Image (cartoon, rainbow, N blue to C red; front, side, top):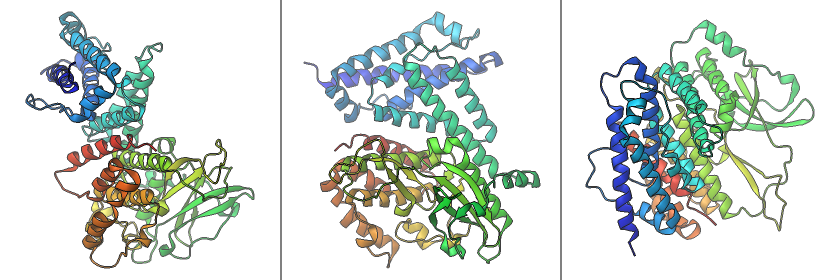
Length: 504
């Protein structure tokens, strides 16, 4: 019987041949303008193939012919012999399409035609659902990395819409393909808006932002925070009957005065949260609208909550906690991909509700979706340091924050700091204990992290298994480096895929 490793070696070799063909034909120099659409479509399919290979830890760069197949891929085909045969057939179909001179001439030669060449979709259909989702995100991240300006991001979004429209509706794989294109389209639009928000701001834009404030305080029953240090969220009654969640965003600057620039930044965040893409892609609760309290210097974001609220408590199953961790990591990855930083991930930022479709049995609550909230300090990654007036003194730099930020509060916030904070939340989810009951935030920030890594994080192995513990350890060890952002993103995407292997 042929060993899985030998089969994997052959399939990896076929993958690399297909990958190199995509690279070669995509790099054809001096293509005329009529080639642009077809070349874009060709590159798109190359990225689809690359996202599949990256998940299975096959190098997607040329010049790696001596690399060996990963154990991850060998284990996959060992556990699913049907998938091994399917992968071979799918890669062979891609190779055949790329070696058909007549098709290449018609589709990607001088006389180009924008026809589809998505033979590699079958590779994704062979993978488990959680794995496919990680490939979606990896594909989107790969494409967005190449888009520098708002115009290039808008072009990418338009390309996704065009590519999806070419799909034959009777093709079963198009459901998979369309979902991936929709994800990238939405993230490209969100990131384009984030980059535009960081550019020159004028009176016309200010007037447009003010129009986002459509609610009035007289319709609510709640207590407004007395000072910027009281940044909180609270439940309120809207128009006498509807329960809503309100998050307060201050536009009071460090000097105690209300700041027009901060107010504009808060309203930009409000525009983000009001958009349907944010609820769908970033895991935020649906935002009903904004209201403003001029006297206190607050803009309040009003969120809808499920009408079936029950008493919370009882046992929280380990399987649900695995899924909650996966949802939260996905939300943070997509938030960063959309060009935003959260800056305040902590237990209080996580909101969850019982699933009203499932019965309450023996004190066990069947939980539904988990939401990432607490966006009071969020900002666009494209915003310049000069615009970082967002009530920085009110951010509570405690044990949830990266030690580098705690030691130097004036340091510009980085994606790695969000990842560290999420690592703390995942630690609490796994051990099902609040961090404040396990460690003091006093003392040297790096020593606190070392204690967490040496004494607390290892406990996850016994309670949640090695995979979950390894994911959390990677998040807790996240560091910001000027040159390592791409490597860090690749590692985080890999860890997100690993979380899909956690079951209970």
